[in-house]
Each structure stands twice: as structure tokens, then as C-alpha cells.
Image (spheres, rainbow, N blue to C red):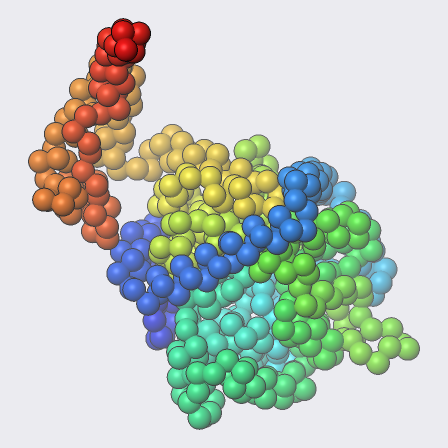
Length: 499
């Protein structure tokens, strides 16, 4: 499926993105001019990134890198033996009473879920937050089939009311403020307007509790699949995942095949990293371990548990000797919070379910590099995303690899290819670099205002100066300064000896 659901950056109707290939510049241009959006995203991401660093320093100190290395090895080992652990998971899950389905792509995942709903006469469904169900667009499929489906994560619930889509992997409504939530509740739920967080939460809670009671089916994702026991691990902070998995008589867990880990001991390592990387918590408030449906002597839990293992391009990604590392991702969102590009343009600019640095890798690989040629370029390669990743995915290196692939596949336009060829030609000879540096310095200094800033740069620099001023280069380059100081050094030395 090449189309993805796309929101507008403010309240409005949910719309589809323009035809592929996707041009990120159009949406990012609008995002950087939206002061309210930028303020909301920047404040939230900076807070989370700062808290992440503090909590890891406090909890692990110098042992943090060793813990990341262990998590990396666990995930990589599982991916290297994924066929073995898939078979093991299926055997144990079915032995515990679950029904396991395999979905090769998004369409098949939706067919499986719709088939379950039809066989069981499902009329109402409650759904917990899940990135893979966003990926396959399960919500739309259920609603189109006449199944009343409600998102129960508070952020996702608000987005559903607004016809909006998530803009962050962990905090889906990071781009909204509480005033917009109050307006949505007033408009859609008939509640009196308020922007007080406690009051807004109480309104949502009252509305959602009745939906849990009436639901025939609950849908969740899964943060981890434990091969050794056939268990699904679901992490939430609001308890909605617990309700979705235990109150309805049918529970469907839709999970990507890369979420496997061998045992609970391995899952425990990753749980130490997941919440701390996401929200700076030691552990999510609710960590549900679901192994089969309820037993005869149990009062709570579903009568049926279905696990839908989703491929949707993951097998092809696993076969790529370089890009397969992206499958280690545990969807913590830390790279988004650390990224200066995401912080500036927000999640909707990426034009896909997976946003930020990891989205710039995953989306082109799952949906086609030629369909999303802008995403690998959406990075300054500062390295903040790689430093933040709890499973040591070298995101900057992989972004450079995709840029090379764009060049190899001749995706870039002729003018862009010629520009980079010229750039490479300049860099290959020191005299060419010196000549080009002098030319650039001369041009930019001529365009600088009296305060020493360039407000309208020529050529590709125009994109920079549309949103910020560019400091004019110094009169003297570093190389010139160094050369002059080296030349004057003997004289300064003689002067020192005389004195």
C-alpha cells in the first residue's frame, strides 16, 4: 500500500497524502512557519530528551553503554535466527491456547482481522495504541466494514475525534495543545469547554469506560513477543491496553515479526531501556504479559487470543546486509526527541506513519526508496539520533547509505546530480577547495547586511535563510589565519627571547 493517512497540521479532516513520490519539502515548509506547532514540538522533545539523559545517568552511570551493547546483541541475535524463534513462538503460543496468523502484507493483516470480526459477530471494537496497526491502516479497514472502532489511548482518541493522525511514535498528539483538546471534546462529545488536564482526562475516561464494557473485540499491538513462552508483552501508561486485552471476549494482538525476543530474561533487559528512552520512566505503568486466553478458573481475560504476525516488507529488509539493523528498533521514540530536524518540522512533515530519524530509514525501505526520496536527506547527520538509540542502531551511517543508494539508482534530478559532481570535483584538489571557499566567502560577505548576517542566500542556501539568518563568513578564513600565524611565529619567538 503506497498511500498513507496524512493529517493537516491543525484541526481538520483527515486526508490522503499527495501521489508518490512524496515531497517532504511542501509540508516542512508549512511546518517551520507554524510557530505554535514548532513551540509545542520543541518544548516536548527537549524535555523528554533531557529527562532521558538524566534518568540513564542516575540509574546506570557508566554501565549504560554496556547495557545498550547487551540490548543490541539480544536483538541482533534474534534477527539472525528469526525463523527459529518464530517457529518457537508459534508452538508455545498455540500450546497456550492462542491462534497465530501470519500476514505477508498490510492487506492480508486487515483481511485476517476482518475475518475474525466477521466470524465472531463483532460490532464494537476498542483499540490500544499500536504503530503496526497504523502502518496497515487497520482502523480504517474496521470502520469501513461497519465495526465501530475506538482508539483508547488518550492521545490517539483525541486524534480520532479530530480526524488527525499521529505525529510521534510514543506521544502521538505532541503537536497539539490542551486548548485544541478542549475544543474537540466540546465539539464531538458535547462536553463543556475546559482546558484543565484533570477535567479533560475525566471527560475521556467517562466516555471510554462505557465503550470497554460494550466491546466485542479488543485490538492491541505488542512491544515484545517472547518466543520461549508464546507470550505477548504490551506496555502502556494509561491502562487502556489492559482493558483492551482483558475486557472484550476476543483479543487480537497485531505485531511485527521483528518484535521477537528469546526469553523473559532478554525481554527484561529491553524493558529496562524502553520506558527510560521513551518517557524517562523506570518502567511503563502497565506492563501486561499475555499468554493465551483466559483459563477455566480465571475470571478476567478474553475467551480467544489471536496473534497476527505482520511481515509487510520486513523479510526483504532482513535480507539487506546493511539496512537490516533497523529491525532492532524497539519504537521508543528517543531518536525523534533528540533530532533537531524533527524538532523543527514535526512528525507530519515526514508523510508516513514512522517519523523522525528511524522513520527516514524504515519508511523508504518498507515503502520504496523512490517513493520517499526526501527522507534520507532529512538529517543534519549530527549523530544525536545514534547516541540516543538504546539498541545502538547507527542511524547516521544508514542515512548516508540510503543517500548513496539514491545516487546509485539515479533518483535525484539531473541538476542535483551535476551539483554534487561539481562539489566532489572541488573537494578532490586542495587548490580547488581554496578557490571555491574564497568565492563563497566573497559572495556571502557582499550579500550580508550591516549587522553581519545574510538574510537572503543564493541558490540552495535560500532554504536556510527562509527561516533563519546566516552569519556572514569571517574576513579571514581559518586556513589564512593559520598560515599567517605560522609565518609570524618565529618573529614572536625572537621578540620573547629579547624581552
